[in-house]
Image 1: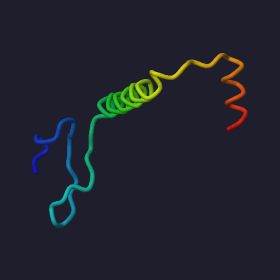
Image 2: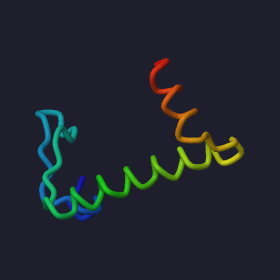
Image 3: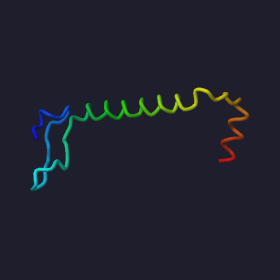
Image 4: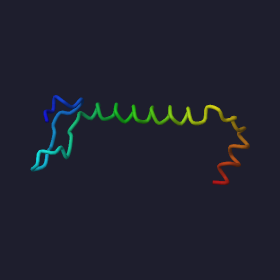
Length: 67
């Protein structure tokens, strides 16, 4: 297991058996990864509702109150 085998990894922390326990990455890379996860989640949510009929503001507020 070499750090070169893992994108973004700067350092690998392993246990006594050599299994990776932690990965140290640059904070800017971490932020970009989080943004990518959020973008993917938003895209999936948009796909899930693409065939739904939009609610009016009043209908949406009633839905929110019922939750």
